[in-house]
Length: 88
Image 1 (cartoon, rainbow, N blue to C red):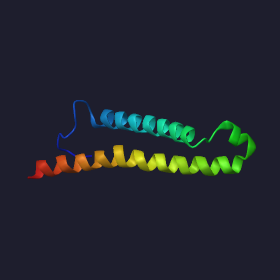
Image 2: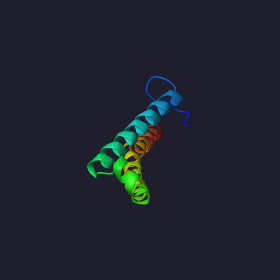
Image 3: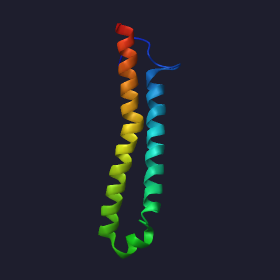
């Protein structure tokens, strides 16, 4: 990690743990809402498990991309910007 103090109050590990928790919660909520929106239900799972698995994999991939873009990549950009400001 960086040696310059670019973190909010608390240690970097605490901050990263909070970000990970937020990302995981966002991922789970997105999977749930996308599955409901696309009618990927337990009854579909009982009728055609392979179709259900395919649809859930697609939903999980999309949710992962969204979380990476909105939480992880934003964090990396902010850290880079903060670190560059310290160098100026």
